[in-house]
Image (cartoon, rainbow, N blue to C red; front, side, top):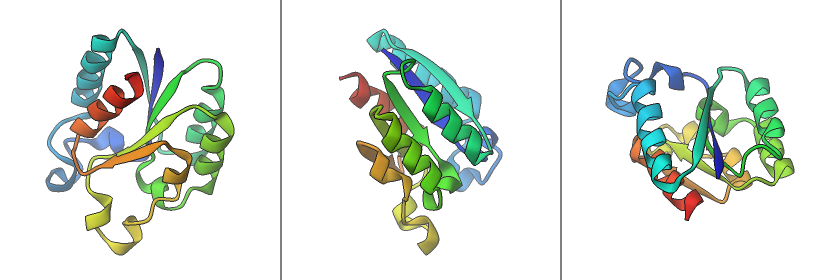
Amino acid sequence: MKILILNGPNINMLGKREPDIYGRATYADLEEAVRERAKKYGADVSFVQSNHEGELVTRIQNAVGVYDRIVLNPAAFTHTSIAILDALTACGIPAVEVHLSNIHKREEFRRRSVTAAGCVGQICGLGIQGYLLAIDYLCS
């Protein structure tokens, strides 16, 4: 099992950016926790973080034939990116959308996910634990 962990804008700033919302764990902490969980299933994980929408679209497109599953945190692109939605739909790879914060309890503009329609499910508000639950689901 090969899983692409795809993170959108500002996720690289974990631990520094609004820790009361996103937690104190760093991006390195996230990677370490996900790698450990994936190891439990014998799965390989690859991480990509980009602040550029087109880069995320390209990575989804290029995942076809390479990855079996995707864990996606589109971050701010969650609320706006038809391009990411279209890439998810076109690639046909099962994906779980993950958000560190509970987007449904935040500002009105953050409560709608455009990209979730291209995913098999969404996990939000559980911090890094959401990524681990996504790995559990995708490997089960």
